[in-house]
Amino acid sequence: MAARKAKGSTDPELVFVPLGGIGEIGMNCYLYGYGPADDRRWIMIDLGLTFPGEQEPGVDVILPDLKFIMGERKNLDGIILTHGHEDHLGAVIDLWPQLRVPIYATPFTAGLLKAKISEERAGEKLPIKEIPLKGRFTVGPFDLEFVTVAHSIPESNALAIRTPAGLVFHTADWKLDPTPATGEPTDEKRIRELGDEGIDVLVCDSTNALRDGISPSESAVGNTIKQLIKEANQCVAVTTFASNVGRVRAVAEAAEECGRELVIAGRALHRIISVSQETGYLSPKLKYHDQDAFSSLPRNKVVALLTGSQGEQRAALARVANKEHPAVKLARGDTVIFSSRPIPGNEEDIGRVLNGLADQGVRVITDGDALVHVTGHPRRGELEQMYAWCKPKCLIPMHGEARHLEEQGRFAKAKGIPLVVQTRNGRMVRLGPGEVKIIDDVPVGRIYRDGNLLINANEDPVRQRRKLSAVGIVVVSVVLERDGELAADPDCIIDGLPEGVGKSNSMEDIILDAVEGAIESIPRGKRKDEDRVREAVGRAARAAVNDVWGKKPICKVMLTLL
Ligand SMILES: [Zn+2]
Ligand SMILES: [Zn+2]
Image (cartoon, rainbow, N blue to C red; front, side):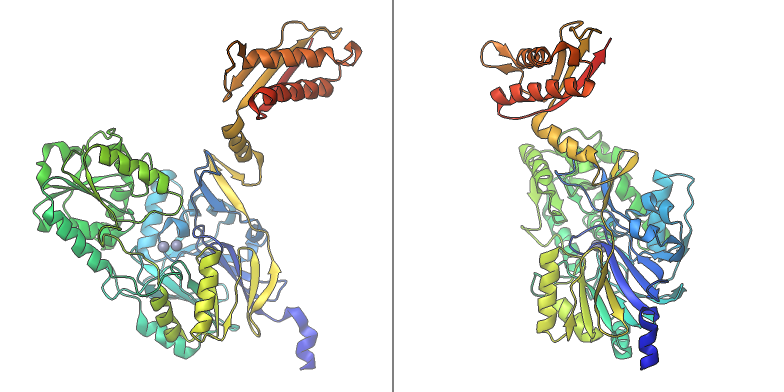
């Protein structure tokens, strides 16, 4: 006993560190580390992105900040991808160059990633190692096993993670669905076996922890869509998440049964269909037309499947709603089925699309009207089932905002799980041996992909853009002679400010008067002090605008001393 104690922190232990995905839905990125505290080997589970909101103007996507693991890069043995959703693999292409380790994934996920690489970074090669479904493999000191789970994309995998410090079951995204549209149901038998082997820690999806009951099956959605297409007299368009291959197949089958031709519009759908045909999730015989065929087909003999279920302005459906689509045009009497649910934050964009369609007399059916969508995440009834199979000693809720995580924690305790440990991005949990508890904090953050560049979320550009969007900008130009006299009248440009103030005054005149006054107030001999001149001019311009407008713009001063 004394000898053990003397070793102290050098005993090998298993730790869990979320870099993204706990405290938010999106940007999933989890680390597991094994070894003595000063010499751990690491694996990364998933490397996903999240989408920007109104607070991040101009940002394309948001990625996890990897600075912690970059400091440990020589000890990182691999990235394991659980499935092909963007919130789990969307950051790989941008961030892999910082890590340069092998990537492990099942064939469909690997195929999707390869298709994305060839579209976005043609010629680039990433070391992707394909692992078969239910495959067991080792990465560094970790003995890993993929366990099949149902979700809303083919090949979602949970991971059994074995180390001498215990067995962890990391569920990734899952639901229970006895009749999924593609692939096999959640592997109850294998999960029960793992439960019997002894799961020390269950790290579990919290997305739907606020919802009671059991989510309906994917096959019920297929039946509803079929019925709706049968009842329609004119053109039917369906939009869904492109990655939901089961839904794509259900729409294709419904079209065929109703004697209609399938038309596909949107790059993401073409990509997913070709990967699905290569990996066996869609039949190579699946018949569909490209969007150009739309106009030549009888309107009552078409089902158009479109990208854009989240109202994305550049996707096919928004362009149809704006009457800007080059091929697909809808009209009064047509039907659009939203086989999806709004991701929080997208409601306004979706509303614009709904209104555009309504203006054209198109009937819209959403998941509020009929069972045209089901979630891919477990509700409370399904969580309870998972707990019963796993019988874990401890639960760590993941994949959720704070309210989802806390609710799963309460629910799990009520269902008899002995210990629940809540963590958040950056909080390191020791999973074993011994008591499961938070032991450290590591740096975490967000990286913006902004055009061709990656920038830290704490840097200025996006904050400035937010400010610009609220108050606009004034640029003042001042040229001074050697003796401090103005070489010419000051000039200014305004952008994003009201131009006129009252009947006679323009904003520019108000600014220029204030600028001249500010320069005159500086003794001529002191006007060589550029900082002083710049500051006085900027302050005067902002104050003058504030006097009439009640808001202070961003102000930049260009000063030239001759
Ligand atoms: Zn997912
Ligand atoms: Zn997810």
